[in-house]
Length: 268
Image (cartoon, rainbow, N blue to C red; front, side, top):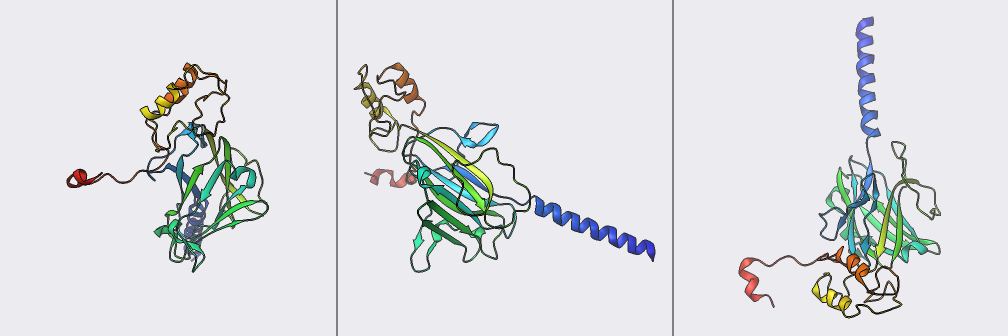
């Protein structure tokens, strides 16, 4: 009898330990992709995965909120006004009748998942609340736009208890005006756009704009439509050409789907 009870206690202890280990591994994280919603945005340093490579002003990215477990915690993005001058975070598909950005709620977030956005005197907040029947996977999707040159650092916070201590490689520059657990920091560095004509593609048309100012001394606004002085030395030369070439044929926005082969002749 005593051995039977001992075995039962051991089995129960293993079950509890397994449950705790499962809970301890549960995480909600943000994943950043290009506007195609598939291609990950590469980090600037593989050892610091949340500091991404430079992107041009005008670039649109997509941010997925992902959970590896069911019933994930409620999370929140927060940007100070100073941060929001550099980059804009935007939920999708606002339904005024229910006060919910339904376009940002993905199936894994469950029925009646909720995304809300507010602005106050201190900054901008985006609340992401999974439903009771949420499952593991991609819960929410948001858009991010690079507005001005500079650095935009965004904090992702858990508004309920997180199962494990979180180790953050960096801190956002502006702490939020609320109590929460910082679980991730996204840091974007915006550089002047090479898409001078605004057609969302860096190509020969933009090269012609750069060549038209070749050798000239200019005082250029890095956020101007044609900021040909890309290195800020007030002269358009080979150094600017090298910086221009880094983004050759890169897009700043998503493009429409390619037409079906039998439709190509009808496309204007």
